[in-house]
Length: 114
Image (cartoon, rainbow, N blue to C red; front, side, top):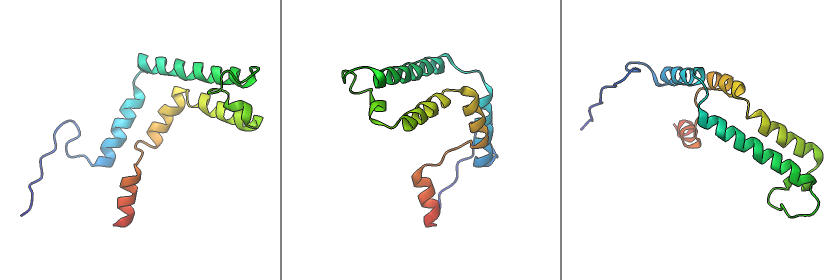
């Protein structure tokens, strides 16, 4: 016995999933940055500053934050740059329009099996 398909509702009715996902990502990237995003941004930057200070502080009293002490300087600088690079909203707005939807491992795995 076959199941009846439910009709699609809402603003994206009749549009393919890929097209709807691209449209939603473009709309999300077009709006203003919410206040909560700025709070998270401040937290990430504060933690990165603390990690940098902990790497150069004498002693091991910030043992959970001083990863940079045990890494070569280039690796520590690369990690800091990537972290701060991820805090720039313009970069992630551009990324969301180029790659609107990230696929989970399960969806990719199911596509490979079929």
